[in-house]
Amino acid sequence: GENVEQHPSTLSVQEGDSAVIKCTYSDSASNYFPWYKQELGKRPQLIIDIRSNVGEKKDQRIAVTLNKTAKHFSLHITETQPEDSAVYFCAAIEEGGSNYKLTFGKGTLLTVNP
Amino acid sequence: DVKVTQSSRYLVKRTGEKVFLECVQDMDHENMFWYRQDPGLGLRLIYFSYDVKMKEKGDIPEGYSVSREKKERFSLILESASTNQTSMYLCASSSQTGGNYGYTFGSGTRLTVV
Image (cartoon, rainbow over all chains, first blue to last red; front, side, top):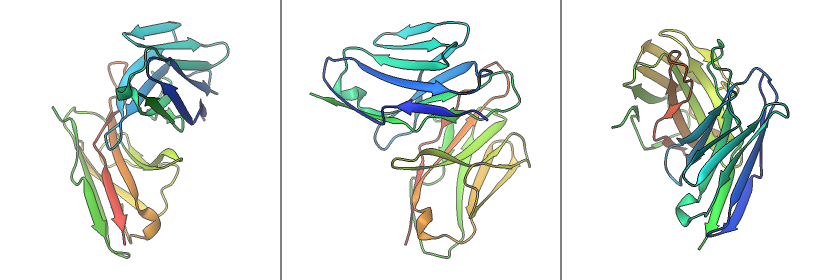
């Protein structure tokens, strides 16, 4: 089955700096990679996703890159703000397959210091 | 516009009690999932269901059972609650159609077993 490794487990940055969270996956059939943000005491929410037919996707201050050959994908947050502080989860799945379970990384606790 | 609703936000139960956690979604999703979330351990899958009356074990099913009698409702049952089942429980749902397998999560139930 799929295995997703996520690093680092904790990340502390100063406000205004960039933050990068990296994930690797094992199953080359995986083709959909969502990222979830979970603020303290709240539900995980989808913030950005990427499919294997593109290498990069941006949405304002967040971007995700995908390297299919190396089987890794990364979340980039620029100009971080205190409200970016949260736990971030990456995930992978083969869309179009019969397994509908996302495989999650273990999460990264991002702290943005004012 | 709440789409995945978990019946209780906080719950305190005694050891040995039978506990029911309810999850209802209004998006006509086929797939429903129960996870538990503990610090440092990420999201661990307990049970999932791809159809009414269908259920499959996840990674940590011991001590739990589930019921899915209607498409919109997925119940998690702790047959005899124990203190090591104190945790945050998250329900999620997703679709099998439309090419988007991403999850929508409920707000979570924080269960304390005393």
